[in-house]
Image (cartoon, rainbow, N blue to C red; front, side, top):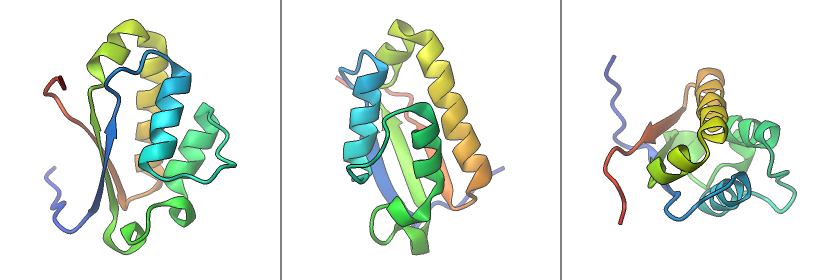
Length: 109
């Protein structure tokens, strides 16, 4: 199924150099400008991705597209964590029709 993503508020989540869950959570918190009370755990990530009130300004009206770049080294180094992250992204997208998460296939340098 093809979606028209034009007009979506786009955030790039760059995971280049991330080697563990803490690093992933820090990058997500920065990329999405999550509040200080963001719990930096899988449940908190799922809740934040599904909660329009913590999304970047303008993204509620437009929908939010998160483009994940540089994820391959993290996925190779932490395959179990990466599977959990993918499950969290999928769950959030399933719960929130205005959210799209896309994995960029090119390797970041």
